[in-house]
Image (cartoon, one colour):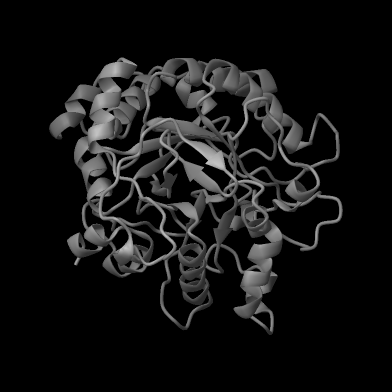
Length: 403
C-alpha cells in the first residue's frame, strides 16, 4: 500500500529446514469457539498448506489461521525491507513472533529482484552485517530463512513492477506479462524447498482497467491469475495461490464501488481455475476513511452497512464454501470509538474474529503514511492501543506478552 488513495492508484535443504520449522512454527487449530483465550496456546503447522472449502489446512489436515503483518520495503527504492536502518532484522522478526503473528506478507517489486544493490540498511547493527554486499534477492533469502528458523511463514507478494507505483494491471511500467510470470517462476524454483514459504499473492491491488470475467486477455485479471498460477504450480504444486480482486469492471456487480483489489464479486460466476486442486485463496483489501473517505463511510446507515458490503464484496466466497478468504491488507491510524476510521477498524476486527478469517495487517512498518503501523516511529516500541485491538485476533499467550 504505502500511498494516499488519491493515487493510492499508486539456501537450506528441505529435510533440514523442515525439522527446524516444525519444531518452532506457531499455528492455530480451529475449535467451534472463536475466543483467542480458548484456542490452543501452541500448535504446530506442518507444511504444505492447502484448502478445504473455506478453510486452510496443513499436511495433517489440521485447520490453520494465518495471522500476519505486511513488512514492506522490497518494493521500494531501498530494495530491502524498511527499518533496517534502525533495527537488527533478526530482532524485528523475533518481535513479530513474540506478539503472536505467524505469517509475513512480504512485498517485492520485479525491478528490485533484478537489482544488484540495497540501501537503507545500517550494517553496523547486529545481524545486519550479514546483509552487507548482498543483492536484493539475497536479502530476501536471508529474511525468509531467518523467518523459518523463528517459526514464521512467508507469503510472497508481487506488489509492484517498478519501485515507484502500483500498476493497474499485471504488466506496464516497462514490464511485460512475461516479466511478471517469469519473476514468479524464478521465485517458485528458488523457494520450492523452503517450507515456510507458503504461497504467492499474485498481484497487489488490480484496479483501473482490470476486469473480471470479461474474457479480454488484456484486462481480465481472473484469466491472468490462472496463467500465473499454473506456471507457479508446475514448479511448486504445494504453494497456495492467493488471488486479489479488482476495483470495478465486473458484470452484474452489486456494489457500485470498491477498494482497489477489493472487488471479488466476480468469483461467484467466474472462479479462478487451476489444475492443482485446493490451492486457491481469495484475498480482499479493506481500509477505513483515514485512507480515503469512501461514500459508504458517510452513508446514513454507517456502520451497519459495512457487513452488507463485506458479505457482497467477498465474504460470500467463504460462506458458500467456495474457497478461503485471507485479508491481505487492512489497517488504519485510528482505533477510537468515535472517528469513522476507528469505528470501521473495530467493526472489521470483530468481523474477522467472528468469522475466523486470516489476515495480514498493514502494516508492521510505522512509515506507511496513511495507516501508520504496529511499530511506532522508533521502529522498536509497539503502538500499544492498536496492538491491544489486534490481540483479539491473536493467541492468548501473545496477549499476555504485550501487557
